[in-house]
Image (cartoon, rainbow, N blue to C red):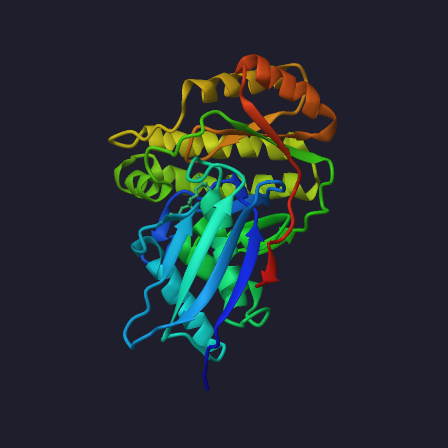
Length: 337
Ligand code: DP6
């Protein structure tokens, strides 16, 4: 039996989920099911805050949800699958939202749509705030919220937990692997090479790679091997095992994109300067393993004791680059009201 919702509001704060082993490609584009397994870390210090208010529809008919990022209304078509999935989940948990609509306002303390996983923290904060505003609170399992976030953006399925998370190929929801206290001296240096939004969305780019890259099949096969290597490195907290798997994953993801026709190139000259710098730093015996996503930014995995030395060398390689030092972040939090 379902009961009518009551008006409510909630605020949630979530962090990006940075993939060490990349999700790139979908098994199912409608349901947004990943074709590769991914292993990620939640980043502390980068926050997306989303405030959601639930309003009754004045008249019957379909509700018109609104999403604003930094005060700017977003094309609601991009969010339709997400809100449909959320209403289904609410109904399964006894709350009828068919005659209610959501107003969501979101902002981040880092650039959106620039390859810093803002869609991961964005949809994770959104699903949690919607749950709070509709009175679902802690009722659904986190895995159910993760599955709804996945419909919005598959990487967001991982942002529902802190620490380290995995999202298997073919999976509907992510799962926690290790909590945020697992690796206290791990650091991630986020180097902001460029501030502007990326030239094409990861969604379009990964679909184009699937359809037009002759290396796509090899990428799928290889990603499970790299996933297992990375899991072993994480389990032993050994960057000399995890690091090479991180590096191979992003390099092979981009190799598949470069081979696509037309090619997909997110890299900028500054990205390459930092990649080269990391290689030199490693040549001097310091663990510094870089990765990149759908944008020009570079993120470097290292240990606390080497953070200063590595930051200095990244600054020398790309003068003026903005660096943020992140630790492993916690789970998203919900505040009512
Ligand atoms: C390179 O999760 O943004 O960051 O599911 O189409 O919304 P959609 O894509 P999205 O892609 C993230 C791709 C990546 C790798 C990763 O986070 O695993």
